[in-house]
Image 1: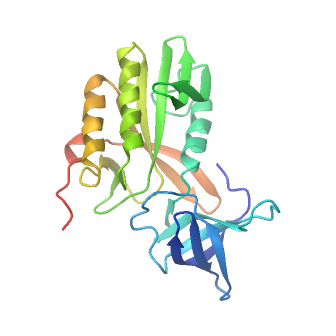
Image 2 (image 1 turned 120 degrees about the vertical axis):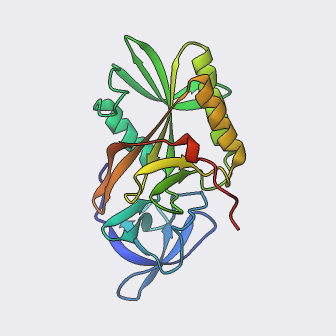
Image 3 (image 1 turned 180 degrees about the vertical axis):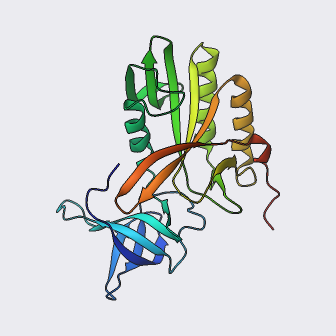
Length: 242
């Protein structure tokens, strides 16, 4: 997935009201940028962080910049746009580039299922139907572990339960965690942040829901699908933060 216009660097002054960020460019000018992320963004929204924003000249948009990346240094980036993972995964599925999910003839997004929900992707082929939910991951607290979630997510736990229901109905179901940062090499749960989600994860996995994690290639030109990352359930529980 390529960005529509070339990104420009800036410094974060502050993020506020979830979807707004004050930014400062190298020439000292300031602007308000859209922050396309309603989550906690732990470690990614510190004042002074070097970030990359996408300019636009759309007269229908009130804000002329959209925050896309955090520059982590050393050539590493984190993507903060929560709309990106589904676009990246969809392209990979349609090109049959997702290991374990390549044998399908049809990729349908946003199909109604479960308890008034829409599954991110319904894959259909000779072997039957597979239900795929996608979660954006960009939390890293220690080592090279990517962790999910970064805040309490009752909606995420509901998705795990609905995928379990699909397995019980005889279908295949997959929870796919896309790690939108390039400095991680394994995935685990942040069980101390949301114990209920960790419990739902355990129940869903025991019910037969497949848990997959993949990395991304991130640069100032775009975000691409990358290699699988190990999912380590034994490491999901962390001691409470002091």
